[in-house]
Length: 250
Image 1 (tube, rainbow, N blue to C red):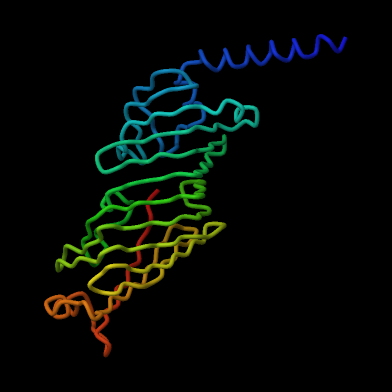
Image 2 (image 1 turned 180 degrees about the vertical axis):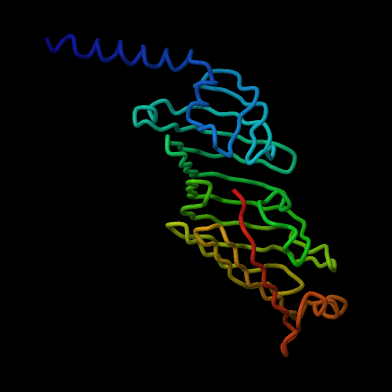
């Protein structure tokens, strides 16, 4: 009797793989509830390897999405994929695990994003910024349209403020961590004409609070020293504090 076990298991495995390889890619959309902020358009290929010509979040187009399925993730009722998202100003490559409860877990994900593509309320920001964000996302869990937990490093380079004054900031690094919807981040600068330090906090409801200090150093040009007071009240050491509070809109 045992001699039939291995051939039977092999036959079932071949059938399972063949079924996955021929199932249309649009089947993946069953993992996306109707009220989800994620939408896929013009889906082609199979669930094994497919493409959506346009992926969007909250009706904001993100670009073309390509994926390769990790088939054995389906045995746990989840969808595991290696993906690539590309558009003007956005390039993301990584691993995603999606379950029926709309929870998305990103691991081993690298992103290069125009800072103006980030989901911040620009109308409430005190300054306008430019540059690109390079992110090393070791873990990011999104649940019910909010960030549940994170472990990531973000590098803003070249960083610059463009309004109300133009000011280069060199390279800004932000280390983010947290669980249960409460996230914290520590900010530092490198190769900057002014030292930038500070902290951010993100609450469960998506409220983002940041407190950043810009302080002149020995390399700060005189014109930048004179412009710092434009950003806010200057302290005795010449530094200026920037406070921002808004919401991350996922």
